[in-house]
Length: 220
Image 1 (cartoon, rainbow, N blue to C red):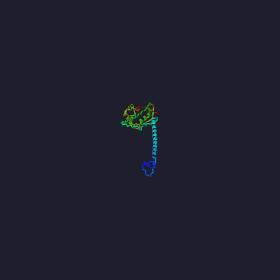
Image 2: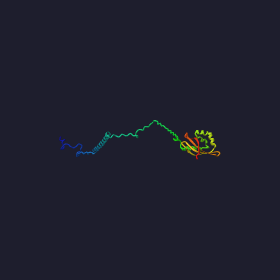
Image 3: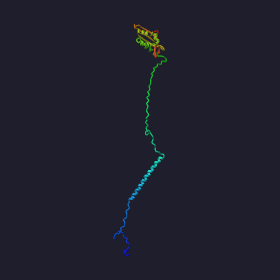
Image 4: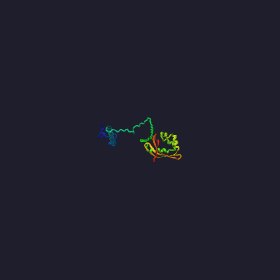
């Protein structure tokens, strides 16, 4: 026991120390600030994400409210611009109509009171202007009654063949259908004959014709 009790107390020297060496207190470990910084950043990031999510939820809620509320989405109007164009494949039939207009011109001579005095005078004057050279044409200015009274076409032509000149003067309307005139004849021998005649005219086929001729006393 005496051997084990050398010294003044128990052996408190840490193992591994050499005689004369003192035990050094442990160096305190420095605390790292990096984990704290990362944690702070995580908190900030979480806050930002929370704000974004809240905004997104708020916007979505408003959209649903607008859809279910009184402001329904406006449906696009169907106009002729976005309507499908119908192409007709039926054959087109073109009907050509030709209108023919026929214009008929009718010349009507209205003689409620018969031919005028001027017409009567012109008819007698025109008749004697054809004679004696155009006796055939003048013969057509007589009614059939007057043609017969003159002896027919042959006698009529022979009479006027002997006349060299004839002239009707003082041609005047003498009534509704009568004309008076002084007729002067000059034969081929140069002899002159003058007589007063009254002509009666009628309308046949729209033409004034001499229907009769009667001698009257010569005016003074």
